Image (cartoon, rainbow, N blue to C red; front, side):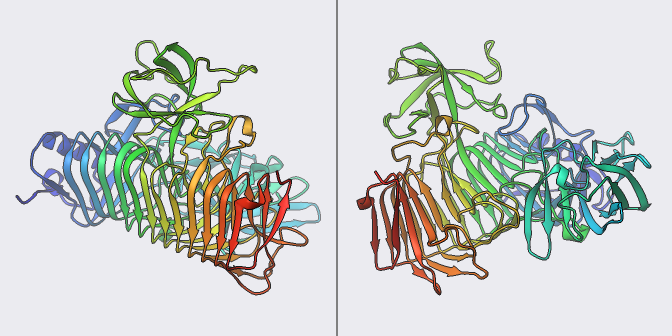
Length: 631
């Protein structure tokens, strides 16, 4: 049976008119809800605007955001309780307005989105370009250019500057107003000549505390005067980005409690809030999807935070043929959630909490889900048996606050107390049902101020055929964290194959950035003495190294690194006076280095810490071993 095609023009006139499509789309979805036939909602090629003023609002909570402060979410394009729907853009452009969630897909199945682009009319990520600096004879100022379409206010001859949104076509009010550096802890700078995008302290940038006054030279051009000296990071042609990361009021897009959702040939120029969040959903595909800034508008930022963030998923998460450029945080972060056990209620029931303040409110466990327990100090598989959930009281239910839930199982608990002698809560648990397989392939990552890929899941992971350039931190980061963010996932089967890594030093940047960094975070950040991750293979990759390690791994059992090409990029910066330490292994077991090739005069060395010599095997290559504090 062929699909029913709905032309959005049937509901409102022609495309390219300044029409608010938020209530129109919502009306269409209300009318087709429950239909048994396949639906194609077609947008003839054009420009479509989605305003928040009459968009649907929902009360719910989202992972990794300040959701408790912002429980009501406005969703401009809401797909809710739908099945078998295709959004066909036909090359159209969607503009979202305000600091809202652009796209929401809730409690839905078999949804396809294809062939369109979207942006926000005025991004909540604001930009300044340094045009000129003067710093001599007691005169210190810098001249900056803004994006021409961005509204702003200046308190003339005062040190105050305000970013403004566009005005509502309904009320003529601004949707938001934010001061200079937006009260954030850090800012981001980008240098076109090097491709480097990195974080700076607020007082290193344009709105440093030593600013004296701000004046407007002409529209979209300002001059900021400083006392004593120019801020350290203010240099000509640098682009600065300002974002209110301390207040993540929503996600830019959300897939929640849905399955079999795909995006294909979609270009996302900006994501407000916490990026594209996948929460407690399954079988999600991003195919030929671009997360890139709108260069036609002179923009350099593509997200308020992450690009794709997966918090609890099942089935397969697929990212294929995608592009990630200029995010404000990590392009991809895939993890589960450790909830911390606070109390034993009876022999089969525990009370647990979302331990991080940006996790709260949404159901984490369901009847029939499988759960695994972990000791936070060791994080090993001490409790191998997975047990089944038989009853749950969710956050916000039956007098629970938004952090707390009670979970009952089909078997008795494997422990009888939850605190150590110091009063620390020592156990966490993970919903094993919501741990996905992951495929990330044939994609490009560039100009990233943080990491490239974060991925922790116990199911099969393939990271293949990707290209990474200009990562300020580690390109691939594998953690499993029971102390800070509580982002869970013991790796059990991961292959990193056929990728190209470029690893270069960042001026005045002192944090470590191995190409592949495996760093679990136990209780108190005290290293565990036993393996946490298992069965990781790094093969047939090419690493262009100007400094740092190819792989730095902690607490891994069965780590194979084979048939990789390690190329030296000059000028090369040694990470040790004597050795080219290309591999670091701490508290690992059964590590194999085999058949890797080294360019030029690399004196390749592997450093092992708190390991037995027999736990590192080297075959068909000339890599020296430097044993440090070996036990």
